[in-house]
Length: 252
Image 1 (cartoon, rainbow, N blue to C red):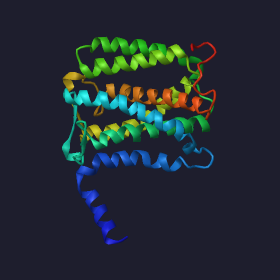
Image 2 (cartoon, rainbow, N blue to C red; image 1 turned 180 degrees about the vertical axis):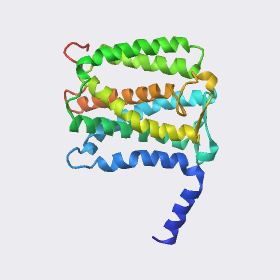
Image 3 (cartoon, helix red, strand yellow; image 1 turned 30 degrees about the vertical axis):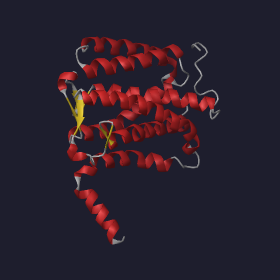
Image 4 (cartoon, helix red, strand yellow; image 1 turned 135 degrees about the vertical axis):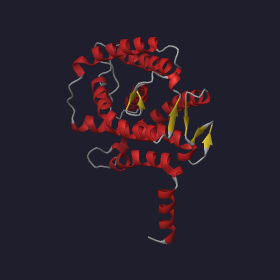
């Protein structure tokens, strides 16, 4: 390796401002490379993936911007490069590309490798119960911005999925459970350093190690919105004609 490459690696390893960027790149590196695996060929679904990512990005950036402006959470300047767009570090924008991409790769891989999953028969009941629990907890935390808004939004999207009774909802539940493993690693790192800081008066104050418990539903909302859009774009582009159709008992 020439001297310039060594200098770059040395700067990255010694300068903590690269931390959030490296977490993003580390999160997407393996899924991106594996997208070209000749059996899965996930890259062939990018036409459906990219618009799903971008639409969800817009929603979450707006949400993120206002909660950061209200000091519900913030970003440690020690661990970001200092490039800000609309009040948010560049790395936070990348987060809404790298993390959903990786989760959708997990979703597609599980569907390909393990087409049979244990949740389909009970997916609608699980989803309905989830909605009730989220609304109950949101009501308890109505005076806390992160808790009240996040759990309510997640409940609303889950209720929509329950209403549509999507055939893939069992696959989604399985993917969400599996995705909690990398979620704990990535969010654990972001909150332990911390790269992301929280005002605990705006959440329940309950932590999974260093992670606010609401973040589990933040991840669910992020993943579910992407999957709904991804499956619908797949159907519209005829990449998988039946993927986003409601079940025979569902609603159109």
